[in-house]
Image 1 (cartoon, rainbow, N blue to C red):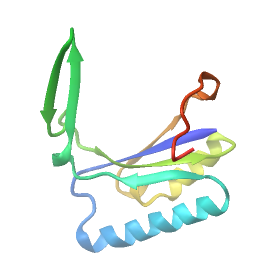
Image 2: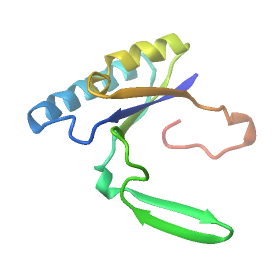
Image 3: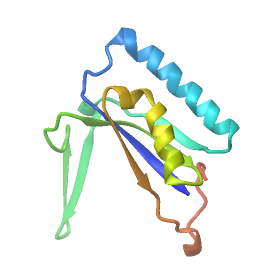
Image 4: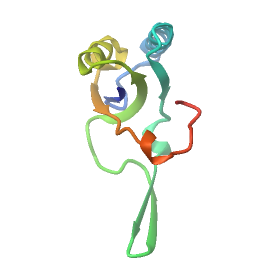
Length: 123
């Protein structure tokens, strides 16, 4: 089953001296997952000041920048994994550096393979 692990953290959770080691550990985890056939894709996100929001209501488009809502934690990155059980996804989430300074949300993906969806580069 495919799960997305969404990493949320306060905007300044990673001072520069801690950020590089955390990124290196995350890359090691990606290699470990790939060796087990469980890695699909992962990426950190640009800072929240790079955010753009698009809403379409009654045919009218609204585009705004910056975070959508004032929150303590912002979406910082994701891991897309393919593991047999939710328990496996939880174990992986517990090993992510982001889980030590923020929150990791685990969401199962809906299987759309029966709907003739185009193949992605990440499948």
